[in-house]
Image 1: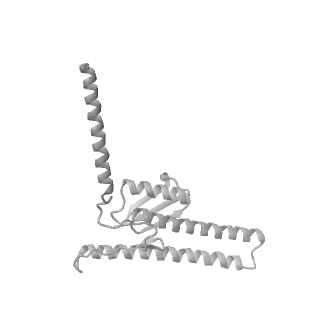
Image 2: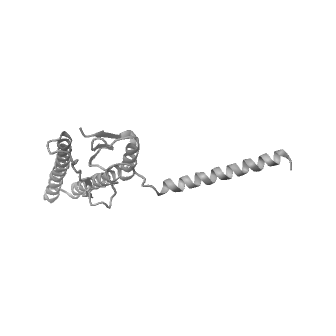
Image 3: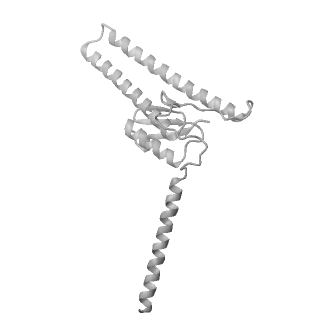
Length: 189
């Protein structure tokens, strides 16, 4: 047997052993839990994500802790933002419906008013869908505002990173048709 054949066989055997070791290590690590994150993963099926926003649990620190106050303030901010947005949309809807019920409108004006109402409903639905999906992907509360081909997304503090920004941009583009160049993502303070 030539020495070059012997070297090739030893090299082949070494590569096979290394490959088997890599497969074994991969199998071992695949069985371990994937996340070292302290919080449970947020998904659309979780009971935390009802009505498009995630419930934020206060940390289990002492009652007077600054972190608990910060979380409570953030919850209040998102609740107030949702309430104000809903109230303003309801006021606009009521005004449009009142105008539609007016006997002074001709057929063309009624069509225009119906178009406005349809557009408003479409925007409201897109905002709600974006908020639900973003809350599920990012794992925190958010508010989405769509207007004139632009989108503004306010996300819970500490939730924005490169990955979540890309996920938010993808969701807003798919649901609302707003590209990343017209998207503003900010964190609540």
